[in-house]
Structures are given as C-alpha cells and as structure tokens.
Length: 146
Image (cartoon, rainbow, N blue to C red):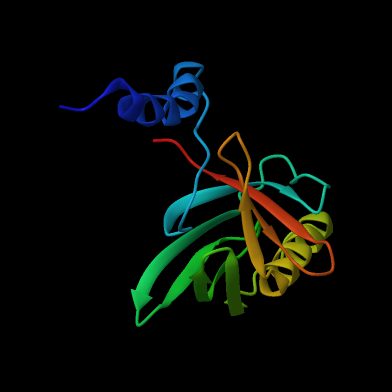
C-alpha cells in the first residue's frame, strides 16, 4: 500500500507542467536538444527579421556526435553537434552560398557565428531553449508545434 506522503510529491511534481499545458504553454524542456525543428525567436536580443525562417534540427547521429541542420534565413546549413548535459559543442558549420538582401545576409552571418560559439544550453519556464556563448551571444528558440 502506498501512503499519501509518498504520492503527494509525485502528484505535485507534475502540477507545474499540467498547469502550463492547460494554459496552452509548453512545459519546460529538459534534457536533449535532439529533434526539431526548433524555430529561432531571438538572436542576441535583436529578434529575427520578419518572414525569415531560422531553424535548427538536431539529428542524433552515431557515436555521440550528431548532425545539426536547418535554415539560417537565406541559406541552409549543417554541421556537427554534441551535447553533454548543459554543455553543447556545435560546428564546424557549412552553408549554401545564395545571396539575399543585405539585412538578411547580416542576420544570417550573426546567427552562424553565434551557433559555432555556443557552449551551453539552458531552458526557461515557457519551453524555450537558449544556446549561450561565453562572450554573451544567445540564440533563443523553441520546438515548433505540428
């Protein structure tokens, strides 16, 4: 027989996720970045150009090193990725070489540069993930919903 003292922490532990889901919010994501696509919402506090698709997909790959790929605004990119808890290593990253409007190309340059510089991942209460570089650059993104 399981006592209520044992059940209470189990039930209460899931309450915050249940409340978030009931409010239409995504619960805090923990663990792996694996999967996707993740849609970039913000780049270094400057947002993302309207109608520019910047996303990330983390495929697991073999032997602990996976493949990251996605759209960087104008071009497509891919590279290696590895995650060990909060530690993340990305790159080197390669991309196609199409030309776009100068503002879009500048945002893409900043995104790809930040992507290779990140070293950690954290998550917030809304389900967003933040890749962080030691120099303060941050890429904020969240899983897209079907």
